[in-house]
Length: 413
Image 1: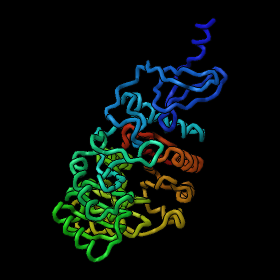
Image 2 (image 1 turned 120 degrees about the vertical axis):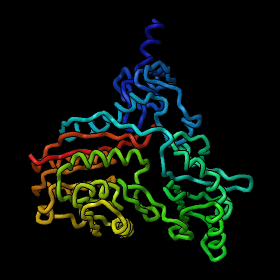
Image 3 (image 1 turned 180 degrees about the vertical axis):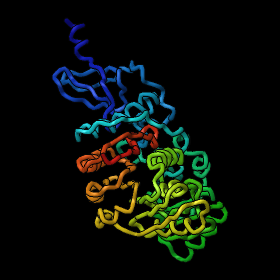
């Protein structure tokens, strides 16, 4: 009797949930979400049916590569093997589509290498005794030191001492400062928010520090204080310097995977539009094979893309136009000039633009997404308008987290 009761108090973890937590169902049918549990683990429940212990018996479990895993809020599934994570990322996309009644071919997930993140946002706290630089702890405002982080590219890891030096100059004590660091081909691009107010003395000190630390660019609360070299990124063979705070895929290999899918999906197209183009991360790779008109709402991104276009070689015709596609989407009359579209909206998706595309006759649409839920909604709009969702490529650009990117090809039936 006692043994039977003990067995009944243990249940198996069935799957990973949307946030990377283990999903299980109690004997009474209650759905349980348990952080750091893996599919195949068993949970020991208390008398109230709540999990009190994870029994780590999953065949998919591994030793987390980072010693800070569990404390740091950046990663949620380092305890799960890469093969299972890749399946889970594809499943996140499939589940979102299923909620909209959509079925499609989902290709095997492309996973970027560890230690490949070229951009990261750090929190920094300076006290009288020390400077703590890292990421927010799980469920608190504590900062977990970034030393030993397994996701940062070597250039960013090597830059951490320079971030601390900048903090010594411009961070007030007992104030949390946000530092966004980007590794570029020209060196470190650093943007700081929440530092000391920028006056003439601080501006001079920061400019000297940027020189001494060989920063490509230093931006302080939105204002450039040192621009020693353009912090260029390689967008398909074209060098582009995104504006401070401008959108940039976090991992170069992830960006390359998405761009390769888009170029292949629109192969043979003579004229295309890139909607929500940013500074041209997808525009320029496609422009080696097709004439591309890029549309973007941020003036700084349009300026960066236009400047790069003027210096680029080996491209077809390229143009950048500022336009808010949420408020003023391209309508069917404007879309009729294009044989293909790139659609790369922010997390909220592109509902208004998709409604117009659904009324158009554009043969092919390559959509890139960072949010399966908004992607599924927009895909439903296109499908209801006569498009067929041909295939989807998940890309695990944010290693060991619950985020997933994807690229998809739609063809008009």
